[in-house]
Length: 355
Ligand SMILES: Cc1cc2nc3c(=O)[nH]c(=O)nc-3n(C[C@H](O)[C@H](O)[C@H](O)COP(=O)(O)O)c2cc1C
Image 1 (tube, protein in one colour):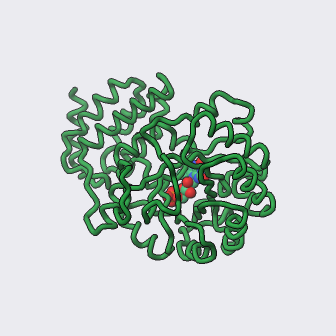
Image 2 (cartoon, protein in one colour):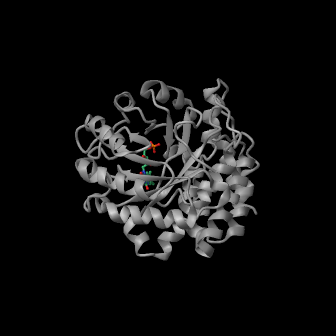
Image 3 (cartoon, helix red, strand yellow):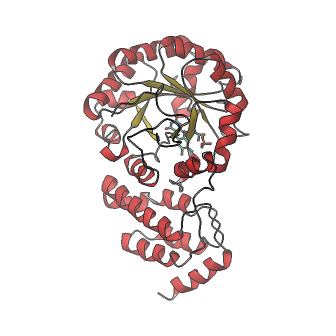
C-alpha cells in the first residue's frame, strides 16, 4: 500500500501519535471502528484514515533494543501507518528509519519536533528542534536519503513565540518534508490554553506541501470548524480518539452533514473487549493491568459510572472485566458521547452487586 499525502482524498483525517497509547492494539481498534477504504474516491470524506504510531527513540532503534523494535511491528490491518521517530542526530535518525523500513515497511515516517516533555527536549529532541532549524534541516535531508516513503514532521507553534512556526515550516519544506502537522500551542504552553487554529492557517498559507491541523478536536462536531479556521488539508486527532475510536467515522458523518453516529453500549463493550484481547496479545497477561489506562478513557465522564470504574480498576482478570462490562450492555441509552443517564448506572451498579 502506497501513501501519498498529495493525492490522498481531502480532508485527511488521521490518528495522532500518542506515547503509550497508539500502539498496535489501539491502532487496530481504531481501524476496525473506522475502516480504511482502499478504493479511495476523491470527495468521500474520511475514507483515507491514516494512523500514526507512537514515537520511538532513534537511539534505541539503532542499538537494536528489542522492546523498541517490537513497538514498530505492524499488523496488516493497521495500514496505512506512519511510524514516528524522535532524536536529534541526523545519522542516527536516518539509520533508525532505515532499520524500521527494512523490518516493517511503514507507509510513512514522521519526526517528532513538537514534544514538550523535559526528558525529550533536554537532549535537543522534540520541540527543542524548533530552536535548531539547521539541525532540523540535516535530519530531514538525512532521512529522505534513505527512505522511499513520505516523511512528515510534527511541530508546535514554536518554543515560546507562536509565530515561529511559520519560518520553521518553510525551513522544513525546503529541506524536503512531504507534510507538516502543527499542534496549535507553543512548547511553553504545554497543554494550557486552547489550540490556535488561526495561527496554523498562517503555516498552511506559507508552504505548498499539505498541512494538518492538530489540537482540541475532541468531538466530531468540532472538525468542520477546525478545517474552516485552519484552512488545512486535514486533521490529526489525539485525545479525541482515546476511548472513542469511532470518532474518525463520526467526523466523516459530520463532514457530509449527517449526525455523528451514536455508539450503543453493546457496541462499546464489544469493542472494549476486542481491544483488551488485542492488547493482551501484544503485552501478555500483564496486559489486563496495563489496559486500565484505556478503560479510564472508554468510561470517562460517564455519570454514575464510579462504581464500575472502581471494579474495573481493581480486577486483573479478563473474565471478571467481561462480566462487569456485560452488565453495562443493559444500558441501551449509552452513546459514544458518554451521555449515559445517572440512574441507569445506579441501577446497573445494584445489578452488578447481585451477580
Ligand atoms: C498521552 C499522550 C501521548 C502523546 N504522545 C505523543 C507522541 O508520541 N508524539 C507526538 O508527536 N505527540 C504526542 N502527543 C501529542 C498529541 O499527538 C497531540 O499533538 C496533542 O495531544 C494535541 O492534540 P489533541 O488536542 O487532539 O489531543 C501525546 C499526547 C498525549 C495526550
